Image (tube, rainbow, N blue to C red; front, side, top):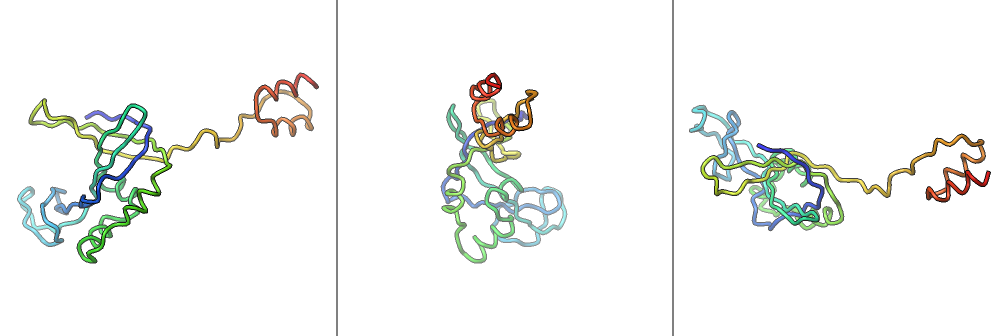
Length: 178
């Protein structure tokens, strides 16, 4: 498995996704059902309760194009601002839809640094690799960072003036003029 970083925008895909999956609480094997219940797991051969885990796909877009990636567990919960249990309850018990328009609107103007893992299929070399998001963080705009302070030896009043100067060219003029 390969891991790499991408800087780009994240957007939700269609709302036809389930946004969670149920899995064995002991071995974490995925079970195809929508009801939380006790099961005899065929994978680990134990009795266990099914537990929800967040799982859905997003589109990541950067200057080179876009790709589909899957969010699992905590990173998915962070993006939706909901725990997997809340997602399951909202969809299956309350029969409500998730506030996807609000979430998409919240993501619209944000750029993220995303850590992706590339997973290849064991069955075939022809199957394209799948991308999974390991983590993401909002990328802060560099224009919002504080200006670099100068290390020029000047008097106290000049230092106050230097702090107010925005461009390097203006700083040089102020220092040379003294």
